[in-house]
Length: 559
Image 1 (tube, rainbow, N blue to C red):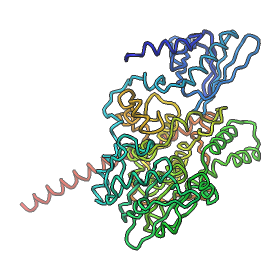
Image 2: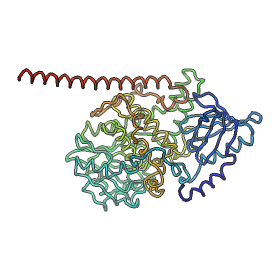
Image 3: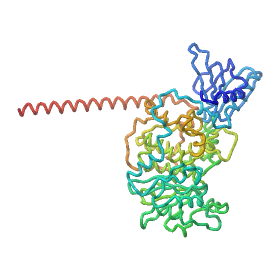
Image 4: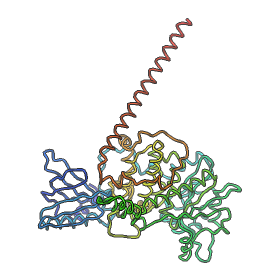
């Protein structure tokens, strides 16, 4: 046990009023009710049944608990636990006092303030670590790949101490012609210091996508010549670029009154600005709450279900995000133009669009490792505030402005594309569901903190295990592999027509109806594909034997 753990365990002990209770009945989706002993530890709620083999029936992370409700009938108490992965669990506990103690302990343990008290700091892997995921996708590695196709960019350590931009990583890729002093000036002209950096280089035609935050033009039309020099450095002679602003024109104009704003065409004559409004913050959280509520209500008639699904606006948000991502990809691939994407802060809708555009354009992002690199580069290192955004899920009552399913929506958009191009992705739906779950509650440190600066201060790479170390261990990927995958080097253009977008049942309905038969069908498909590979290998071996026999016959005849 690490130093300080004993003290921390004392801290947990004070929060646990009743560490165990007998004769507790557990009700959960797809399993019969089971009676057993409930135990509370610092990080888990555990229910073990009284079966002969003493098998564990439930092992739930406190950090996965979104909200709890208490009910009493006489002295029998019921605790309803609503989880961040959208599951709902019920515990029947005899004795009112015991039930109240357990409920208040669960509430305290599931809302710990200190990050260092969270489970990733205590977790010890039970698997052999063959790769340290903390070092798998460093900016230096990405830059090596870029350097093999172009020499117009450089890796800058201007943000080495996180002093220029607190939400950027220490190393960023910028045009070679722009020095660090110019970057410092541009940082003072962009919201939160988020100056334009390289997001993606399109090998096919050398066009690029950059991302940043809004310029601080204000009502006086403040300008910064280094800023226009930086983004102009990405343009080919005589070519125009596109700025995709993820706010409506109206919202962007209102931002000027608060010191923000957008790029005026007078100062950026080679750039055409397009406003593609994408919702953010609590509007998305409200949308998720409404959708999950509709999915959990089993009493609907058809009209009520369809009107509730529409009222949630979730699929409308999916359409908006995919439309903006397709536009960015189109500008790069079809128009042969470079693109700059930003909204206000550049940490939410901007990242949805830059990462989805890369899935459309770049086959590497459709592989397991390529997608991990994308999440690392465009979300974690790019400063998406996971700790704030994923603090609560669909059952939260807190309604904080900063809680928002931005990353969840991105994963849903990826699932929509995967569904339309089922053979173009190396990973399957389970991989996306796993990422959704770990973003909200995990034994790994990958999604802790809000940016690289916070992760550095927390020493996560030394004190916690990376999710990628677990995913990339030898036996794991097969669970996440798509058996239909055939590498496709083409750009894939998803349809964003309303008829093409569907509810992601694998997440939203997975606790409401059994996927047993779908799982069996998937297993059967896997078996058929494996058997086909074996037969193909036999055919190839027999062909080789036949060719050798024919060669031998030919040699005998000639001799």
